[in-house]
Image (cartoon, rainbow, N blue to C red; front, side, top):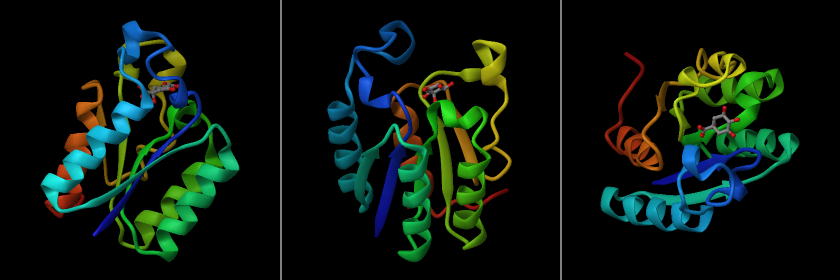
Length: 148
Ligand code: DQA
């Protein structure tokens, strides 16, 4: 089975951007980790990143059309993109798992990060565990975990 791991704006700058918050490893490293975790879990994992809201929304539509579960780090779109929220809702409405992941714990940071327009729609949310959050998300998908 396939899984798409979609990363939103500025996550192409991992390793360079605020390493004290997001760590010293780059997106390429995250790609390798996700592919290794996928192999362990029997999943074919595709890691994508875009700074463009339209592209991220398009990837949600594609996931619906291809019946593919999604791991989504919406980055800053988390906090304000109703367009992405509506697209993510189509994924979960189709009965597909969508796990929201954040590398940092947004609840422990600036006030504007406390609101997620994606969390109410996500099957589940994992925050604060660094890149390991993607591993947990892939494990949830491989294990067929459902919304409690
Ligand atoms: C983030 C948290 C968001 O608040 C922020 O805008 C990001 C990354 C995270 O992974 O911790 O770009 O989604």
